Length: 197
Image (cartoon, rainbow, N blue to C red; front, side, top):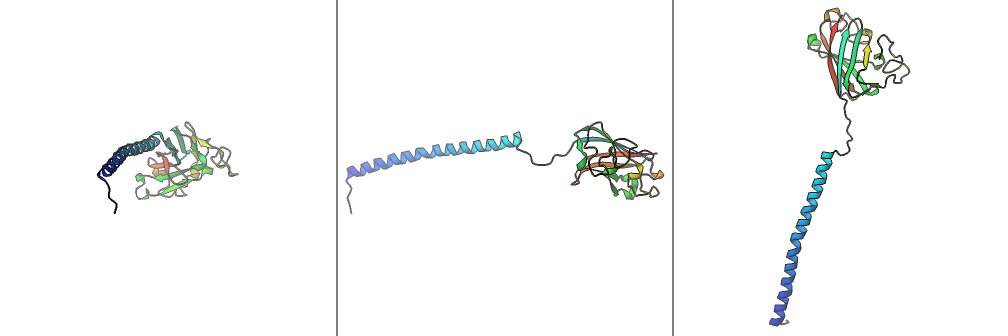
């Protein structure tokens, strides 16, 4: 066993106390640096969300609709304002309201070949949302545009003799919903249409 002199022992204690002082001084600096890094990363994440990170979700259109229905002239849908609607991804659905009593659960999808942009034009013509050749005749439904569907193409119960058909004379004054949805089924515009003669 080696003996340490008192003098050497004091020198060792001084060295170790100096080392301890140095180690204690490093610890608060590292702690402050870590807190600073965490604060900067948190601020970057918050500003990213507040500033808008790249959005990969599908945004729905914001459209105001007006719809009227005449048993003589058919359905007229007018885009009263908002985002343009791409016709190739848009489905028009008619859904009965509670004015039809027990039949309010019934709905029909209007064929895009039957939707025209000029009253009196043939379904599938160059004025249709979809032409007979399968191409898009009208690419977008914009503010101020109107779309027309003749009474024969409404597909509500097929015949006007049906009690729930919009073409049945006894249903004048009743209402039905006109909805625009995308092909996934998300409704982005909806309005009521009153049935007139």
